[in-house]
Length: 298
Image (cartoon, rainbow, N blue to C red; front, top):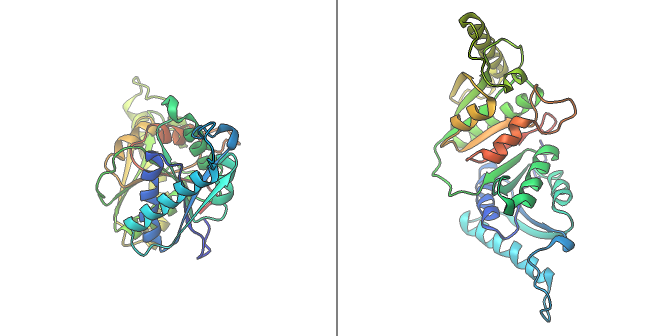
């Protein structure tokens, strides 16, 4: 995590409603953190689908400038007194935003869901940013936001990335005055790691083996949070070890939560993967803002 006091919360915008929802979330988060909000629009000229052809005196720079300026005005109206800056960059969105994230406290981007053909570009950019950014990344779904509930949900699996996510989640809970629900998913057998539970439950498992897996999951969860409970005594914490597929468990548990927090890659991923299958599933199908934290960004 970028601990420089001048590091901003960075919001990626592109003029779409999805990006404006993310902007709103980023503005609120910048207020909570006492940070300035940096608004960035990145586009690549050959792929810039909104440029009208054959119109005299048309300026793509003017259009880009209007997008970021409208976003800046919106953010300042939402959070009066918020320090803001807005800029646009010509270049492929992912590399531009990764460069911006290297100087940020937090990067925020919208998602319209990777399963919708009209949003493949935005979705792939969000996934790349979540996988590779040097700061935590929050992906905000394109849906009407619910009123704050004072709930933060955290996925824990014993990995280094999950440890970084836990630290971020406790800090988020403390800043919001929110309760934290920390979960781990487990299968029918004791695997000694979260990754083994990424397969469906084996219905024929004996009760003893199932209970051993549950007990092991509860132990890992408790040990993972012990130090953070002491550092954040003001955060109310509920621990749950739940049978099932991790992505489904976390999606179900995060309904009506203010934010879902996970590590970028758990113990079940292939070595060298920057974003695990569970994290990708949450970014695709999740219904609340999802924070993805890498092991080297806390």
